[in-house]
Amino acid sequence: MASQGQWAGRLLAWCGFVLMSGYGIVMLMPIFWMVSTSLKPLDQVFGLPATWIPRAPRWENFANAWTRFAFGRYFLNSLLVSGTVTVMNVLLAGLAGYGLAKYRFLGRRALFIAVLSTLMLPVEVMMVPTFLVVRDLGWLNSYQGLIVPVLADGFSVFLMRQFMLQLPDSVIEAARIDGASEAGIFFRIAMPLAWPAAATLAVFTWRETWDSFVWPFIVVSDDSLRTVPLGLQRFQEEYVTTYNEVMAISIIAMIPLFLLFVLWQRALIRGVALSGLRE
Image (cartoon, rainbow, N blue to C red; front, top):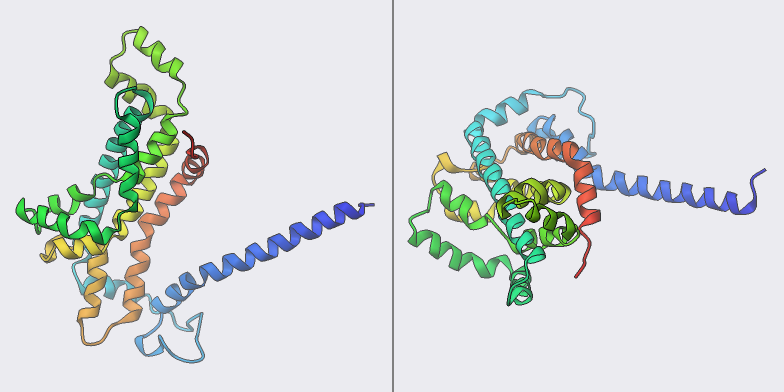
């Protein structure tokens, strides 16, 4: 028979399971409501009592939402901007993190502190000067204006630097003795070993860029350059907001992020776990 301690442990485990299950249900309720609303006619969206499972799902809401505006173009723009920013951010942050972690030079610590200090600046503080620079460069209503100002940030450098600190110096020194170039060491040794951190950063960067609204809203007014969040905002420009179609296109917009997380979840968890704070 199980001892009293074993019973207490099982009871505690079940209590934890029930609490976490309840927490998970609460967190998923907005998603359930979004899916339910996307399948309702407009006059039933705010009906009381609320209907979680529509009796006659209206799948045509997805087609209507997709064709109401040029969402094919908006998705293409978002894919181009998010993909470019993600690749370049991982590359630039990897280079900076590797340099700060593995090279010894005067002012290295001060430079790292300066990079960290940028994390304390609110986005609103940097918005106006960044916009003025983009305007003076003639990058308004252009892909350059959407991409270049967000190519790198302090958090990305911090994440990659923390992971690069854990790479063994002996491996890098051995590669140098064998005649490998510094670029070869970075691309053929450092980055392959740091792939969990790179994958984590890629997921974070893609999510942040894909969901970005304020900066694209400021820098873009041409409809052909709008991204998905700006396309969703166009529903508010009509006399009547079709909330069922808004939810339908929002679900479609979630699919790339969902697939990215499913494909990279192991690397994401490992990267977060291994990129701990360390000096």
